[in-house]
Length: 239
Ligand SMILES: [Zn+2]
Image 1 (tube, rainbow, N blue to C red):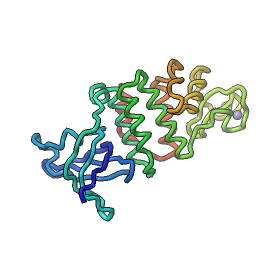
Image 2 (cartoon, helix red, strand yellow):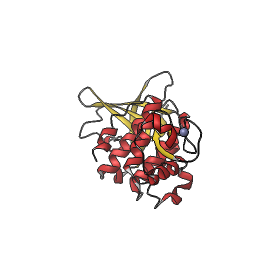
Image 3 (cartoon, rainbow, N blue to C red):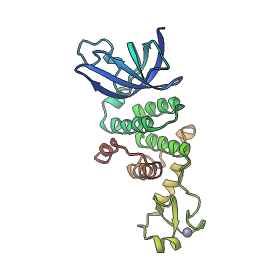
Image 4 (cartoon, protein in one colour):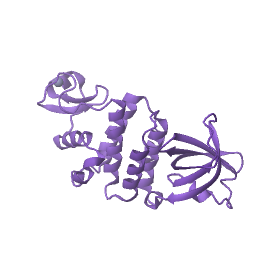
């Protein structure tokens, strides 16, 4: 009775006139669906702690047999104002939570929190987003091949990237694939980002990884090889 569970709001669905179901990502229980009565009423005293990306303590009677738990109250621990007030950061954070909400894995609380921290205030939000997507690609075992040609294993004359084939393609193999050649700088940066992680984040500044084009390649890679579809990606494309 009266369990207090900390988590981050990753989805909200309107129900009836003023109710809402929020999905909260927690460290201990993975994703939880919480039913908030009158949560969308102006007078709701819980609403301020239940908005998208809020990190809050949620009070409920946890019942493992129920798909949706009844929310009693919520207290804000941290709100990401940098995300809420900047359209670029908001768009990227929306894609992050959409990816997380589609993954089966329940152990991503720390990486979610870390990514939102960076998206909230880091000077290179696209770098943070790219590192997050690379983390997910690794986790799913669909990391792009960036040390050699994915088709023949050659380590020289790398010419382009084939999303469908899974990584770098050399000049020879591209004679039959006919992918548009990419400039060497872009290939280098794609290689670096695919070896990057939050552990070495401070060393990534200034390497030109804060780049939408890299994000677009990584997201296309993720969607192609995981079967995921991301509605929220459209708002990033329009930035
Ligand atoms: Zn090749």
